[in-house]
Image (cartoon, rainbow, N blue to C red; front, side):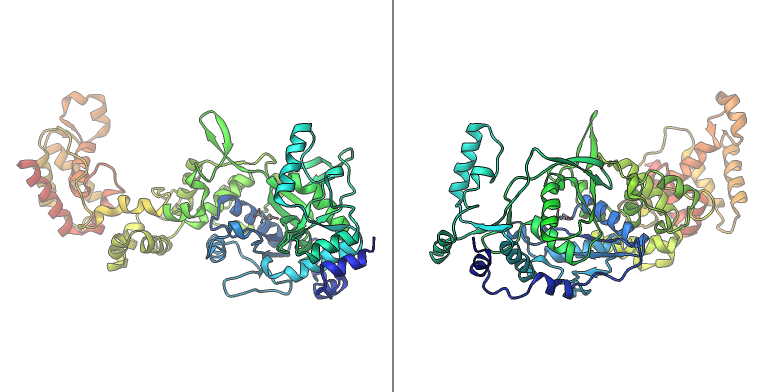
Length: 547
Ligand code: GLU
């Protein structure tokens, strides 16, 4: 067979050679050990937690070694593409702090190894496609959908492996004349790889996450270019990751079955194989058993979910670091104020079977993260969230920033900061009572004697200028006056002797002022609310009790 002629016939316009490509995309000038990694998502409009896990792993590997992280948009499957999805993808990843050094961006490409969008790289793929044809390693196949369907049926009946191989590879050894006739007749064709592998051959492979695995050689003549000249994922992966000088491919383990073909393809193209880290799926507990997070059943798989719930980006980031590297949590305890990027992330600690996602754990992590923030920071983040998801609350927050920051500052700083909030969505129910517009009386007073009188006595004597101990002494005095024990120890020893205790008295005041029986420190709450509002609420509560 005259492969040279076949190549000209199939790719008459391709003039560049692989050598030209090597010159255009030379090896990177990086120090020994620097990892070049990438994210290569498809723009489906759905960015999920798995993308973030993969992104964060490659980001840490690249940046911890002084290497490069780039973003490549894999848009070769136009059926799956959604308008605007590339922008959503880039913006979402940026929101989660995945910092790319180069690649596709909303303002165009950055870097010398582009274009970084596969649909713009057709000419490059064709250089290598032509080269493979010239070397007898690829050939056109004119099978129709119906032909392939028939082949599948035959294979099913005969109980043999599916695929285009052996005697099923009907275009593998056709003569040039026959091929030429098809082309002249305008018949569509795909380009197939001529596999020399055999399923009898097995070899071991070292994956960075899975460890040593046994691969069976690929014997299928896989498609390299589809009939529109667009490459399959496999072919684009080999060409792109070689020319972009990727050293480490971090991707989901759903690609593991294709790995034997990728190994074969890199070899056929004369490319050095990158290192692979195949990440297991994210799992969750469903009753007693674990299962993969699913797009259909689990809203928490979508990254938009975390934004709408109001999880700070840093909470999601820290949580993911924690599920990937189990020693992260201890490190965080010893280094409460350190930047998470100073933690020594290791791909070696990734669980080969995949990580378990636990929503409650995320909330706990988030409570810690928020408790370490300054009131100023909390205020800024809350503004960002409320502007998008709760405009009514947002308007209240910006009406008096100092008031809002004072509220958010309660219990902050110090060794044991309060951990009230896991999400920004929880802020409104947590602090809404500070705003008359949102204040509601959610909890009734308990059935205990003398409540209106107690509230009246407290309102009469309330002095904003009191220090906390003086303020509390007043409450104790009121307790004594109305037959409630002011000393908790005495009360516990003989509860029958009193109507209740100072804890009950405090609770009456709390319910009157905040509308409920749990709130942050009441002294601080009253200081922020101010005397007028405190007494107005006490009086209104008394009036309510007296009707
Ligand atoms: N486009 C592929 C995907 O979204 C990329 C896999 C890879 O990282 O190579 O699954």
